[in-house]
Image (cartoon, rainbow, N blue to C red; front, side, top):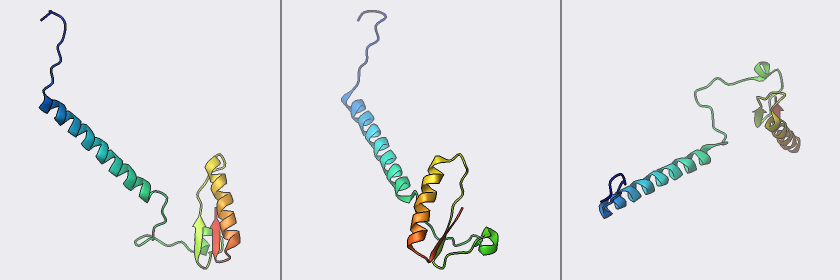
Length: 99
């Protein structure tokens, strides 16, 4: 064996173990990603929080639901969300949108 030249020897068992570990990590990361993607952007019922009323929002509430949007003047996605919610509220009189 020449001096100064590293030799990489992998057993078949070592290679199988590394491949299985890589596959397990990829499978776990995919499962976590799909779970987070499924839960993102979903409306959830408030069960233990404080409910807001018309006085808190300084605006009338919708009979069925009220969309409360927190935004800033420099937020580009906020303008898009405002347009969508304005259209949804215009189509259903039982909804309200408060920004």
